[in-house]
Image (cartoon, rainbow, N blue to C red; front, side, top):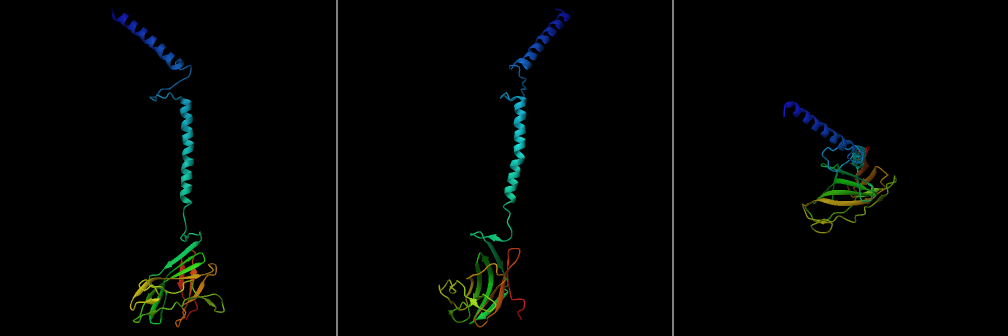
Length: 218
């Protein structure tokens, strides 16, 4: 067989293969045009495009929901107490209010306001004589100077379980609780006893309490 006959034979075979390919591509799936890109599920172009569009449209909304839930949890400086009311707090390294009563040195080191409950934390340093430390702190309730005592009945020291402190001992965790009107700021209190120092507690806009002498105190 010469070269001419070989070329004719190959051309015929190529033509037959072309016809078979055309039939398989265009008529091999009941007349539906199918693209096979290595995915064996047989997904059509139309179905694949619809699925991709649905996925693309759902992604931004999911991201937006996550972003909204994250930013909504942002809170201010004031913390929330268990009953949902604002809780204010202040902590002083150098207490602004300190005094001496009956041989004991006393100072207010912290204050918190949660709802209608004002809690003062005191540091008490005992003198050289053991004895019951009187709780003389009072809240001034009106302009006439009327006062009310705290809900806390007395100081209770951990080593004795009573108001009797150990000579020379310093107690830093003594809490005194008052029932107050949180809208009646500033709150005016007195140390009572022989010292009788007036001081006020006020709430600031950033969720803190100030403890200081009244502006007109001399």
